[in-house]
Length: 352
Image 1: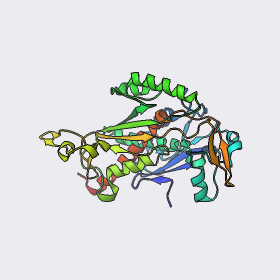
Image 2: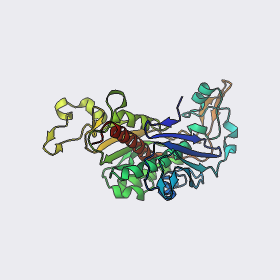
Image 3: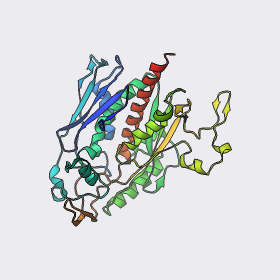
Image 4: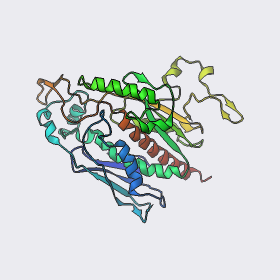
């Protein structure tokens, strides 16, 4: 069983719990000779770490990465690369009062049903903290993709009922929402703060654009490129769906509208979102994912306990009012992992 591993040729395994000693990742299949320093990984982790604004959890984790193997004299060696981040601000006492209650929207109930026991300290493996290992691995994958000039840009497209109207990529890292429209970002932030004051939370939509992927990347039938990107996205705890290109709007289009006609220089439109038949077209790959509202809210709700008794519950502690800005680097990381894995698989098939 490999529920904590992802990828075939470029394969990662994440480990650790939210309130355990550490979280981290082991990567196998790393290309040797890639320049990599802890600062490269740290840059990506700093985008994901808590405490970045007044709508994210105030948990004070520095998330300092430690590379224990797989790098020598500033370059990857090709051997398994292991990275770890120590948990320095865990506070399981915040969960003492609810450890026998199932939090609505959380994996408390399902983990108990699967394993017969569960780590109630901040969700254990089901916590968003697990994604730190993914982001660390994604930083390595991005370094490999950079050699091929492949770019991955994710951002908040919609949150709290407000949608971005412009695409200004240079603004994404300049606002608390990591939104592509600075004016919409301000409106989102104000609305999220208002909702947070009512002891509630919000979700949103993340869009991702990938450029530089050549035509021909992806596998037919079961391992389609879009299918594996979908797998990667849906493995992120808060993600509840995915659409590529025209997405669900395709259901109301005619074939003549949806088909991407071609000219001498390439495709005229991109309703397919850069992938046809599970294989990249050379166009920009575009997809969107819905992110559910953060499950942990302090508003009183009804649940039951491990003994089957109906109970009321308030989830106190340090939680995000909106997970969208911190999920952006996770989305980019998971896309990078998929692309590196498929590029390596393609290279094994054809060397030219």
